[in-house]
Length: 367
Image (cartoon, rainbow, N blue to C red; front, side, top):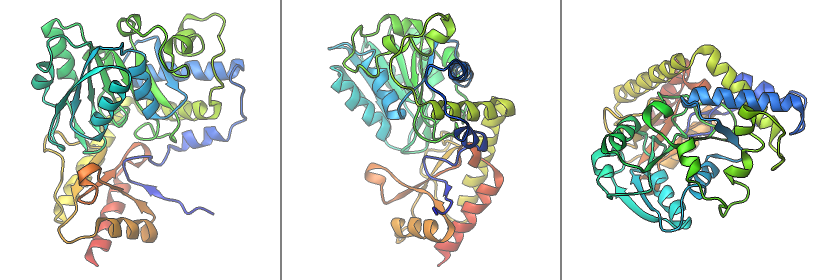
């Protein structure tokens, strides 16, 4: 038997019970009318959590990293200038993926732990095809102002597409894709959505879709082909075109998780994450720990904290896991051994989780 874990790291998080129960329902075929109903309802609920009316909003049959690949492989033409705001590991990863698609990448580097400097990003190139940024940087626990980035593009009259990583932000903090001018967005199920890893909630608007690569290098992630089966097809109706065998149980689980979120109310869920994050961060500082992310830009759902001098980061994480069944994350990149990442996401964004992780940290650090 596997011992239950309290998944308080950067993801995955413990799933909502509704998401888990859905996995035990009878398995459906990927062309079963009942499954197509569940899929279409899932896409509609995804539109709500994305804050969009995009017809092409769907759960890609892969994890969030494939969402990143799909975003770039479908929109980057060889030689396109792509400006990427880099303030952590996942901004760095965007530059790699864009370059592999043939882009001329302009990386706008920031100090890790700081939010994106909107003005510097907008001024990085006079006419980029795409500007890309991470809304909630999972490696540093920092929120960047996507709304300001979109508003800046509009005020400049710029024609660039805005591409956003919302893996850690979706269903955890405010996200309004249409209002903010987001053209392409991707996310993952395993964080604030409270579902197991395996799907990449994705959205693309008409403006971006019209500029897509007609025959992208990835067959599996070709949005033009996928639209005949899911997302666009569900909105327009008509005959479904088979593309691949969808992970039907995972889609049903996402349906369960989204139903749970929307029954609570999306803004109430955002507020619950904020309250849990505020309480955790205050508690960490009360026991003498220093937070890593810039004040004023800290994510409530993912807190980064500096490892105290003289403390073995890996040993603390090992004891938390073995003694208390609690998983927290190491830092990333140059901060792998000097930062901890503590996530209270989805089901875990609640007061008892805050008290549990604080008590366990005090126990381990006290010895």
